[in-house]
Length: 287
Image (tube, rainbow, N blue to C red):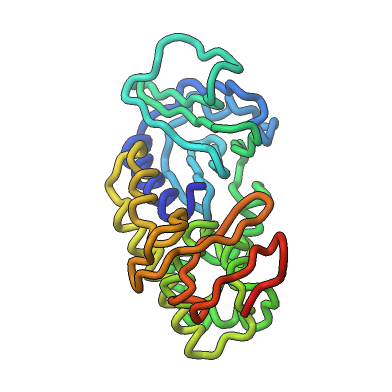
């Protein structure tokens, strides 16, 4: 799933390639992608893109005197930029293409979604806050005003495990499954430690890991074309998706805990005092 660093890089890429250009055609290929119907998706046609913004994992294309086109790529969605779009009409049901946006220059982008879950979402709204997912977002962890005191206040009464708290978009915007693993590894903390149990020193360590991990990932992605962002994300991950490989910090074997629809990866030596965590589908956490 694209998370804050990749969506931030897409925002920068689209700012460079979209702003100042007119949207001449929006072609929804998979009707399931459209989450709003009034105004229709064609309402952005004929309008110039004036800004591209990021809200958590949401991308917002703002148009002059027109509505906003807001996208959430979900787990399996992606944006593919094309300097020259195909001339023919795309055929529904043929491949992963969900929506095409064309500019007056002949360039544009396709939104695609692999798999069968169909969670890719496109909204056409007068204000991004009309999108429920945007309206409920917590603070952006890379915003200038997001300091350690604000982070501590968010976790003070949080009774969930750290892994779940970091992934909650209403608590902190933009962190998903991959970067929560990376942040906890950098902070040397168990994913199942209770958020409210952190000491001031632990809170500081987690805050620094959060900011550093995301900032470094954004810097690695900055300036890359959209098509290279997935590979860059994978190459920069130290524990997520690397089950069975050696930890780059201590050399211990990276382990995994599986859930019904996802998994997490961690290093026992760095994060859990050398103790492996039990699979939560079978037993409770070993501490």
